[in-house]
Image 1: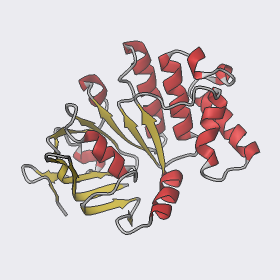
Image 2: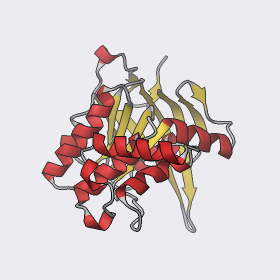
Image 3: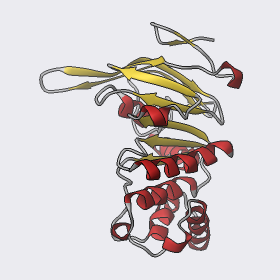
Image 4: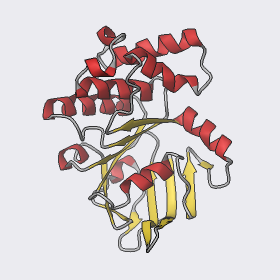
Amino acid sequence: MIAADRLCKSYTLPDSSVTALNRVSLCVPRGGFAAVVGSSGSGKSTLLNVLGLLDRPDSGRYLLSGRDVSRLSDRELSSLRARLIGFVFQNYNLVPRLSAEENVELGLVFRGVSRSKRRRLACDALEAVGLADRLRHLPGEMSGGQQQRVAIARAIAGSPELILADEPTGNLDEASSAQIMEILEEQNRRGVTLLLITHSPEVAARASDIYRMTGGILAPETKNSQRGIQTYETGQNKLLP
C-alpha cells in the first residue's frame, strides 16, 4: 500500500535550513498497521504530510497503492487523496458550527458524492463509531472522545484504503484513548491500512510494526516477518528489495 524509498525533505528558514526527512524509507503492506513514534520536531508530521499527498518530497520515490505519485499534478494528487486516504488529527479539525452529521458529510463533498448518498454514508459511519444518537450535536456539545469519533467517522465514510492518524489519542483520557484505538483497529481488521503517529508507547505497542523518527531519520523498532513486511537496512535506512 505504502512504499516510500529514500524520501528527503528540507525547509529553509531565515537563518538556517532544517532537514525534516533524511532518506526515509518505509513499506506498509495493504491491510498493515504501523506506528511511528518520536519526539516533537523529529519529522513525523512532515512524513505524514508527504505520505498523505499534502506535501511533496524534495527527492526520493513514493508509491501509493502501486502508483508512483512523484509526477502527478496537484489536481491528480487531490483526486487520489480524496479517493484513497482518510485522515484523523489530534485536534479533530471539526467545523464548530456544523453538526456531527454535517462534519462527516463535508468530507464527502470533495468526492462529488450526491447529497442523499452523503447523508446515508454519514449516518452509517457515525453509527459505526457509536454516535448514532449524536447526529445533530455540534462539536461543542460533545466530549473530546466523541469529537474524535466524529473525526474518525469522517475519515471512514468514504471507505478509504488507507487511514493516516496524527496523534489520534493525544488529547484524550485513557478510557477514550482505548475506545478510539479499538475503532481504528476494527477498520484495520476490515482490511484498511493504518499508519499512525503517536507519542504514546502504549498506543504504538498495538501496531504490528513500530518505527522511530529521530532528526528526520526513520528506523524500525520492531518487525513482523509473518505478515510479509519488508525489512530495512539498519543504519542506512534504505529499503531493501
